[in-house]
Image 1 (cartoon, helix red, strand yellow):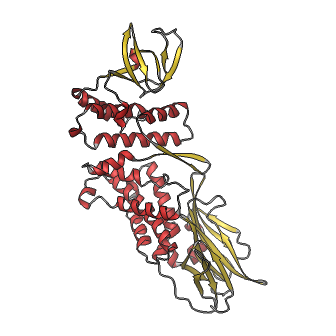
Image 2 (image 1 turned 90 degrees about the vertical axis):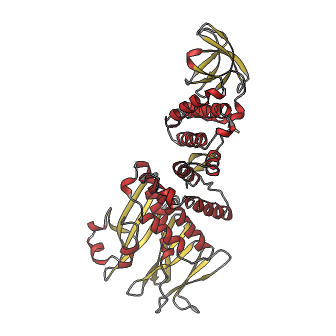
Image 3 (image 1 turned 30 degrees about the horizontal axis):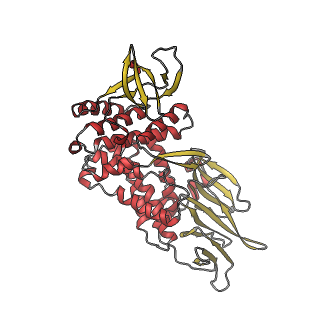
Length: 466
């Protein structure tokens, strides 16, 4: 428990960063250690304008200036005052370590019967904000020191390496306590959002464990009944819809990999994304909205029925080696092409060129990342070229067929991906001969060929035109 770090003696909490713990009650005395906001000290005496203290974390005695700490008596009568300070610090960026210290003090002072979900909601909010600060490229010595202060109160963080940078995440214990106690819809929604973050999933997690986790995330996002959802402000409602869209898009991919071809998960992802009112989202939430759209765009094919195979160039799929799906072009007995992959082959995306010499199909090898396979007849036979959403390590993105250009041997595609933290979206005209981009624009209205030859089914279902 977080309160275990607070003992019954008279205590003081450091309120200023880089507070000096000195060997004597003088500014000129030797410095024993550097203290940070939230550090807890046992008070053993007072000398002039200094307090004589013992630092349990560092196991060191010394003196600190009285103006740089606040006394905590931790009596039951002090609990309301501690809670008031905690409420102020909860929404003060940069004061997370100090706020966590006040949570510990309040839990120690308040009677157990009077402790509700509020202090745990505050603790989770501050711990999550501290983890975000620590994950920023601007994080420095102060943030590292605040993490150490939080650790002394039992607050735990997990770290992952993601895109060559360190991602730090709060383990969510306080939020799980909020969900297990009677609490307001606002607190419940904050806890659900914190416990369902995409960026706090261990990238090394095994597939079965990941599936279980994603099912739990979906259940958490659906736990608030309509009556409680109605009490939330519009921005929070939209954030929940955005998160649901991303989680259900992931579930659609996982279910397709497991052989479940039902469209429910993919359709749920599309519906949640379509229901989002972007005008109610802030700048940070716009980023997550676009990421959710990338996830939905990558797996939206799961909501569409596959076209019935017909003609000489009909495309079919069949199981290959364990975990593989094989794409067949042409006759099943003597196919023109057979190509196998461990990715998910979205047969609903298969399209054949009217001249019978080209075809395309979307293949999703990873969650949130869908590539376009271009099949072409060559002198040496049929070949397959894989076009990724971006020329970078797979992350979030999709590349999808948008139409054939008759007679000109051209292919229309839509491409969207997050590259180095930035969203990039383009509509392109490709040469079917070289697969090089001949023209591109940020909107299809600027390309005449898109206006003439874009595929009606693509225009109806794509999320790139949102």
